Length: 439
Ligand SMILES: Nc1ccn([C@@H]2O[C@H](COP(=O)(O)OP(=O)(O)OP(=O)(O)O)[C@@H](O)[C@H]2O)c(=O)n1
Ligand SMILES: O=C(CO)[C@H](O)[C@H](O)COP(=O)(O)O
Image (tube, rainbow, N blue to C red; front, side, top):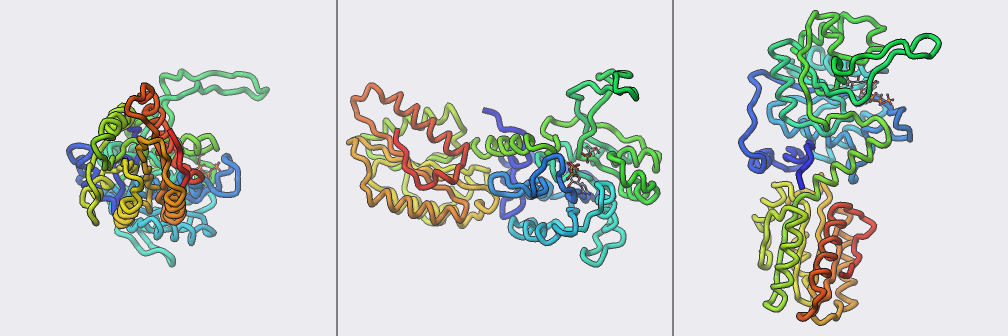
């Protein structure tokens, strides 16, 4: 299974996730542009096309606002010095509380305008004049403009648009058109159709030499500010700059309609369910069953770490596992109860701070050779603990695998156990927290 190209995958500098750990997972460090770079994220819209009361940038994906994913994708890039997020006046405090909650320390909030262009203009002004609610930031050589509702932006495309902006003055990501563009005549009939191969959809991110785009915004008309939709066009019209167009990856789409929110949710779930850490503690009898489960899981998901021992406190292994973007922990044992061990795991995971950004899943798997399910008391302890740690964004589930040594059905049982594990880590459904499933 291949990881989707999402801003989440390679780490996030917020809330303690280190970009060095991300670099370790992703191979050699990407290059750094030889210019100072800042970013403006317009987030001042009301999301009319999506409908519903909450502007789409504040809609929750796996419990975390969409905008936090976009800000996180920018903050994990060390060479972007300042990040400005532009929101409507009524959302300034909400935005500040999001930045605080998710540990986005390099981002400031600026008040937006009535249209996207006006919001971007306000965001740029902060590098020249500052204002009463936001500090004056140091003017960068290159500024990135990126819609706050495009959360899956990667360092590679940001680097490319910045380098192209340095050389050409302006640059933007483009994608092939998915439909043909046609023009209608006054009577609503087809007037003409464009040759699709010659056109591109203009996406984000875009980047500009700061003075080029700032001057364009200063010179453009009210009509441009109120009805324009394309920053590259302003750079062309008012700063005589022909932007370089860069073919971007497919995940740059803008969350616009409700269906886009479902797609974003699904992509994030794909990403966080890519890797598991196995923690096993079994006697000889059960080792073979545990091994079979391990092998079956390996055919579905990447096993980043397999620890076959009790967990010491402050386990460094676990710290490393989390910094490699593994958010799923499967504890397999054949004891009547591994409750103490689960408590210890929870404590260690809490110390990593990772659950601020992503829900962490723990599945306590009990291999039950005697076909005698855990006692009622043990189940109640698990359910109680699960309820408590759910508040901390740690989702604990139980799974009992009943098997017999001579069981011809063992393979089938293990397949169904693996399928349950995969469903739990993918769906991360808080409703099932504390439930003990049986395979
Ligand atoms: N006055 C505005 C309007 C839009 N935007 C931002 O520009 C980006 C792209 O705009 P769009 O998808 O059109 O967002 P909305 O205007 O919120 O959506 P809609 O057009 O459906 O109302 C979004 O991040 C949006 O928040 C902004 O900063 N200020
Ligand atoms: O991709 C873009 C090109 O600059 C903009 O995000 C897009 O044009 C914004 O338009 P709208 O606000 O109408 O969705």
